[in-house]
Structures are given as C-alpha cells and as structure tokens.
Image (cartoon, rainbow, N blue to C red):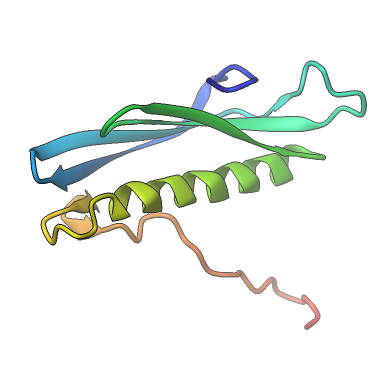
Length: 118
C-alpha cells in the first residue's frame, strides 16, 4: 500500500499479459500530481497504479515540483511494467502487449531539447 492516496486519474492504458495460464488484462494508471500532506517544503507526489496480472501495485514518484514527480512516476511505472513483461521469462509464451505490439508503449529515450547545450 502506498503512503499517499491515489488521486484523480489523468492517464490510463490497458495491456494484455499472456502467460502460461492465458491472457489477463493489466491496467496502468497515473494520478494527478498533488502536494505531499506531510512535506515541510511543499514537495509533490504523483501516484501510479498497476492492476494485474497477479496483484495490484500502487506507488508514487516524488519531486520538488509537479514535473519531477510526474517524470519519476512514469519511470517507476515503466520499470514495474518491464518486470511484469519479464515475469516468467523462461517461458517463451509470456508477453505484455498493447494492441498486438510488444511493450514499447512508454518511451525510454532521452529527449534532446531544442537549444539545449551538450
């Protein structure tokens, strides 16, 4: 259980987990960033939740502002989805897919900002 509650869901995506026992729906949700109620300096958290295939998970990313909290939540969610996708990787039949494509659904590349210095 997460220390901070889930907030209003601002983004949601459904995946299909295919394992030895068949297909199971996996739902990933991101909540709206919110101020941590016990933070002394106004830090923010952004909750995320994954339901399935074996249990529900609810965690959060925390940061000094909404952007950092959101980015850390997305990073944590991606890691958890990758762990689900690798679950039972000794079985060639285990997959986590989105609309018949493999899990490439959350970007993992560094973005080069226009005008950014190297």
